[in-house]
Length: 202
Image 1 (tube, rainbow, N blue to C red):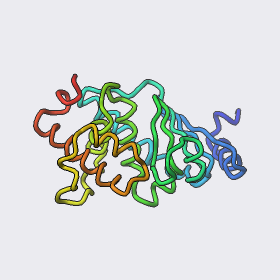
Image 2 (cartoon, rainbow, N blue to C red; image 1 turned 90 degrees about the vertical axis):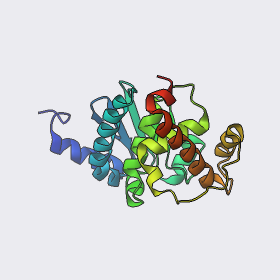
Image 3 (cartoon, rainbow, N blue to C red; image 1 turned 30 degrees about the vertical axis):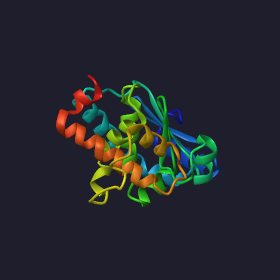
Image 4 (cartoon, helix red, strand yellow; image 1 turned 60 degrees about the vertical axis):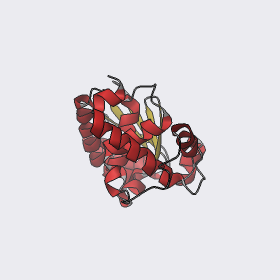
């Protein structure tokens, strides 16, 4: 029996490769996950369940994830920053149908892994014409992240949409969290008033 069809042999090989710093890959339908830290393998079940749930929920609101999507989990925060050009504190970044993430086990430890997968799944399926603030606000609303946002005003309620877009692009700004919360507040309000399909322009 070849090593590719023997689950125990593949698991042993994956652990050997990741412990040596070489990427290992796993497929789940149209989703492929590549990781270099052996600890990430224990999080694959969480990733697949979150992805399947997101794909189902996206279909409900009229969107569809691409037929082929890849998740590339970095081996470290510094590796993620070097690969994406994003700050090391960002959980993930989606470019087309490729999702770049921090170590899966690091996201899981912080309680962010399912939310991150759902958030980035939305980005793979979203209409391209969405503005930055609306895309981020809708992704956070869809993922469930908005539930943990602090109650009360964000302090950015009077900020024009274009200025909010600019604020979200300034990764080092001290008001970045407030900008994400404000984008989520505005997007959530639109969804409640008009429904997902109308907001998405479907």
